[in-house]
Length: 298
Image 1 (cartoon, rainbow, N blue to C red):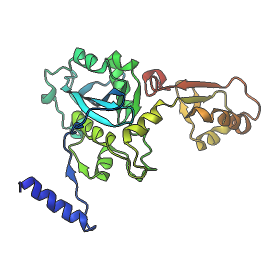
Image 2: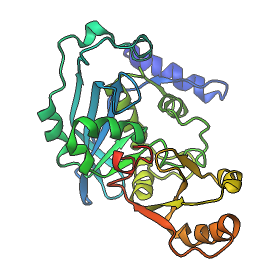
Image 3: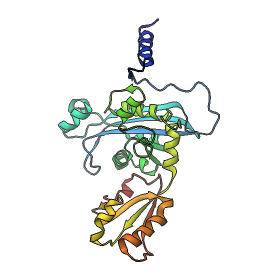
Image 4: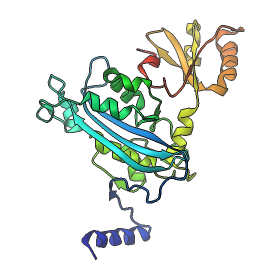
């Protein structure tokens, strides 16, 4: 018996008592043994480490990507390629970023992400997945235009983690719920962690995480703008989860497309107190969702 196998036996024994939970170190994804028997597509997992959170001023200092093959069922079959590169931003990395990521000035000195390699890797992806797509997409498409033309999905916001029995939605918390731990806050490590989650079944429904994510990501949503709403209705709108766009000076909400008629009726009744026939509603699909193009503050 190898030392590793012996430790696995101990871990299994502890867990079998019901008194212990054992976390196992995340291992690389193992490709499927058999070839696919369904239509397959190419997916791309992306994670960035940056000098800050503003896509107009901050810079990507590390890019991690994993390219993989998946089936129409949502099953992940195999890893096709990976990339992990550092980039020198040309100025000191803020100390708080180094504390968070472990990436310092000496690590990135003289380093540059290969733009051509990135473009080539992204080119044939049917979907790009990130665990905070509203951040990663805007950081990526600012530098690499190829990302702006892709369908994106967010594994943080577009998987019903809470309904499936999870309390924390951060990558590390979700891994713990699946019995794993990993070295977080480095781009490629987080990509491997996300791939493991995407290939796993959900806790309650048993559906594959990737299948559920893609189903939700494919559905168009509608951004409804409460243009010209009376100031006195601010709390009514906030209570219904409307958000304020400082750029457009207007309240808005993102909803499922099938809810549009109900939302229009709500606004006419509770906000405008009259019939409104020119309500502005923007239809948003996976190609534009999370993009700079649809950022209400961009």
